Image (cartoon, rainbow, N blue to C red; front, side, top):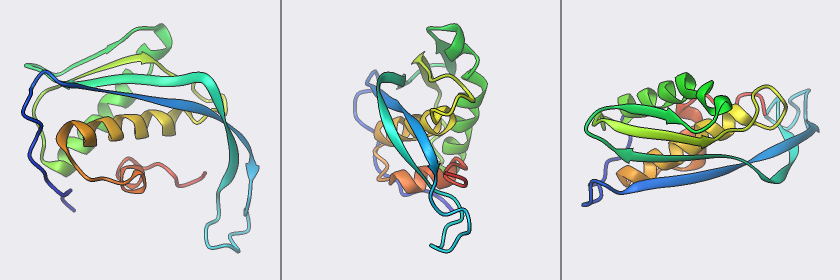
Length: 145
């Protein structure tokens, strides 16, 4: 299903920065699915612990990182961009810089926060009126928690 379209911002050198905090999962709320969703959890935001990125238009596609941890997330980040570009039809080259990422597989929501931060930056850069739920669905997040 194509995404809604809007005219791109006039300035081509504008970048969009997004910070997505880590969160600590405290447990599943409804593992039996009796509330209509098998998974869901309660969590707390961890201040000062985040994924930070900048997305901007570029003359050629470029993924970069500021830390070794962020470097390990570049492939996944690029896959998220590809999905968003395919679904939106906005295929111009982009530069994505991961300044900071949450540690993977440590219970802080690193994969979801990375996906949603990229999706939010992509939507803002292109003027797309996407909700967080729509971004999550497109990028395969929110299936378990």
